[in-house]
Length: 278
Image (cartoon, rainbow, N blue to C red; front, side):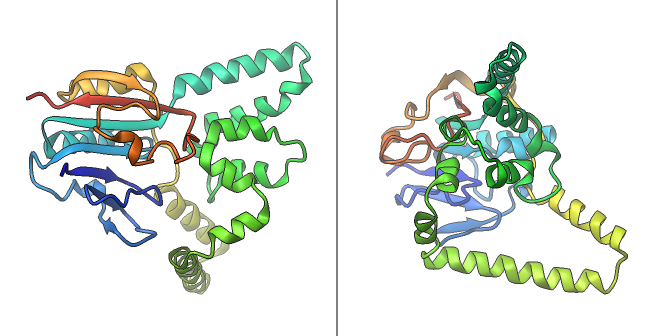
């Protein structure tokens, strides 16, 4: 049986016994709790493949380099690293297309323009959970739902689907526990700081804690910069692929980048793989 590693999995994990799933704060059973800034807690040359999706952009350039070095270390010779990140080039090209459209009076492109602007900057500068993207989804009266779902995939489909379906998702016991724990922690935190700090100090502390919580984007990658990172750290045979394509055997059976119905989890992604030399 192959040994496969899924880093920073969040709720996107694989229950196949060949996979080990790791996250800083596990939201469900079967996930190992570990801070990846402290390295990957396994010996050298252990895994046939390492995978992480929408993790690298949340790290500083130095931290990201160290993580990829760790991936190289724990891979067996001939092992595969698969990385998925938001595609900076794709976002920029869509922004320029939408900007040109609205400039020439194409009002139908207004929704695309507003959304792609948020994709460019919001997750790097936001000071609260969800940022302006969440506000836009909640309050915009003329959402281009098809375009938004084509950009944020599974997350968009879950946010924009009927309320009754969202309620069904929350019936899972582990999700209810996660929501309750997060709420309780927030209340205790608020009570403690409200008695010790001024309003300005409380705001600064809340923003600071949020900024280091892991939600914001620290670095963005395009095809060139991600390929260069992998190459500089020793990977060979580096190539771009799609959500359903991979050199990892039986990739299509794990449903990590695409759902069983073929729906892509994060369509705005850049997918790239490299091989640790034998």
